Length: 134
View 1 (spheres, rainbow, N blue to C red):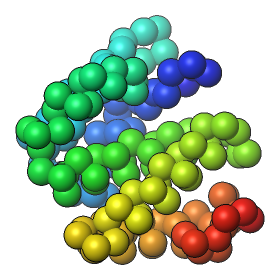
View 2 (view 1 turned 120 degrees about the horizontal axis):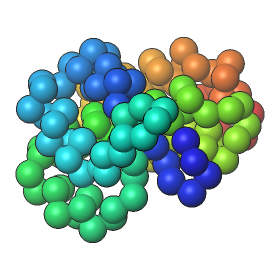
View 3 (view 1 turned 180 degrees about the vertical axis):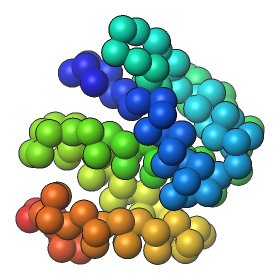
View 4 (view 1 turned 30 degrees about the vertical axis):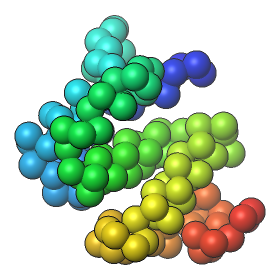
């Protein structure tokens, strides 16, 4: 990942979305169409660079699918960030935000985020989603 662009490996994101979050291939492709595809000497990546694209694609995918997609994206950012880095903090903040967004209308994802949070507590240092600092 570069310091100016938040990117995740294509294979990591596909694995998270199709595996753990059980999105269909069509849903994965719709979600990843919101991101910029980058291929370089280090591999294939999806980058969060075009905010206009995010707005244009919001109506194509169900909100629940979009939320799962963002959870998968930010999990990949977290998994590939250095401990205590800006990217780790951004990813934890984004995942916490998704949790609060989903609590009332996407309980399944809110529950999945809670489980992930508990499983990764030793890495991010916050015992609960409500805790501000570790």
